[in-house]
Image (cartoon, rainbow, N blue to C red; front, side):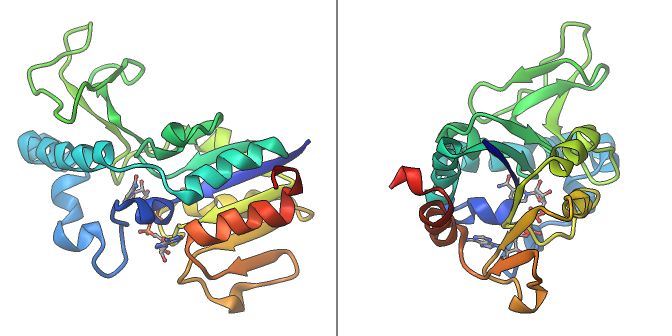
Length: 230
Ligand code: NAD
């Protein structure tokens, strides 16, 4: 089976009702990133940061996977599918995708502030501030904040290097280092860029731009490149 690697971003969850990051009306227009998504913010006002993520977690729990997430599960019938997601939601997991690498963490988990290897699921949407890890350190949301290292980057590079086909779905390719990932694709890898705001001008022999919503484009791609599923 050929290898299909998918780099997904906030846009793939937009049709599930979870706001994206940078678009007009996107999440961050209403918040100052430096006050909610940096280590300095956590140090200064952990209560505010924790409340921000508690709200986001509630939204994620209430949302459901959409046609785009399910189409990627269908693709497993024809390809070895590896998803690399910038998203902190768990909609790929709940749709049923098997291989998922989270670059920016997982909002439904907490991790120790003293030992980053200690990661715990969060019951419900509230991360209680009195909880500690087994070594006694307080817990924080298991997300990568601006200014922090992205620990899974090297694993992701290697995955992209081996891809026969690469889907880049719902990402503005603005947040580095994740945005640089597609440049690791082999010159023979066929790349599909799926984003309603992408420009056809970005199309090349190797990169096919599909300027549509992921919920339309991905089920259509399943029919085109994964005929066994029909
Ligand atoms: P971004 O907001 O910068 O870009 C989103 C992209 O999705 C845009 O280019 C937009 O045109 C496109 N888009 C909008 N609707 C779409 C649809 N229906 N189908 C396909 N594409 C659509 O997001 P990003 O590049 O992922 O970077 C944002 C960062 O914020 C990520 O690192 C991520 O961790 C975080 N974030 C995550 C979530 C989530 O987990 N769902 C939500 C918001 C932000």
